[in-house]
Image (cartoon, rainbow, N blue to C red):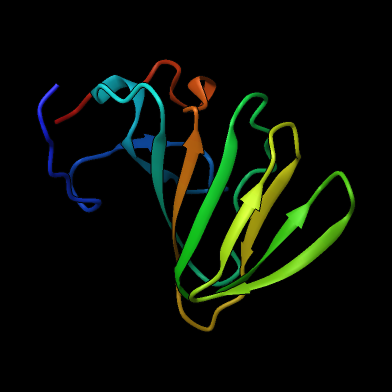
Length: 126
């Protein structure tokens, strides 16, 4: 596989992880990635993603803009997150993020290895 340069505003597949919207799958198995996946999230204030679990994947995300809470659904704990925070979620941990505003929440999310169930049925569009 050759080097690829992708844009989060154009080169993605829609992943139904945000209630009423979607996350952008940019690096994923359908484009050739085998060992990591990368998703881009944009959530308006008050939006949240769907509570979910990655059975075999570590989930790491970096908050680019905004404020929110990451909720550990297993422990019932909310952690405040904001621009500059890095979050680590171990495999088999129920979690979700809620945007608090006042600006949109932006983050880049990585799963290692890629969580194949996130991409099931998606087609490469670029």
